[in-house]
Length: 95
Image (cartoon, rainbow, N blue to C red):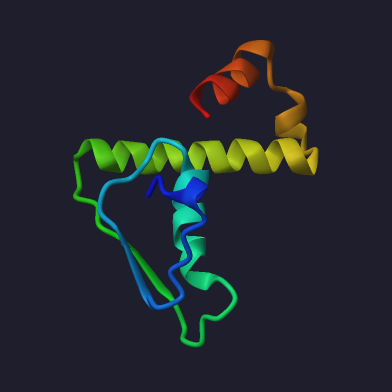
């Protein structure tokens, strides 16, 4: 998951299985994207294994909140315009 700085490409893989979610959703996205690089000739399927009522489930909810907040900020929606300094700092702190 954290091998992004090494230039690792996984074009030989057509399945990616995330078993342990990372706090930052962009790290997981980058890990999945390594299988979609130039040279991939097959469709890639990504799975996330998460059990109900676990810390991992809470992490995925946090991912959803972070993605929504980032989307709102980038799109300039009314919700993003109403964010206070504490919400913006929380986004940066948890990144």
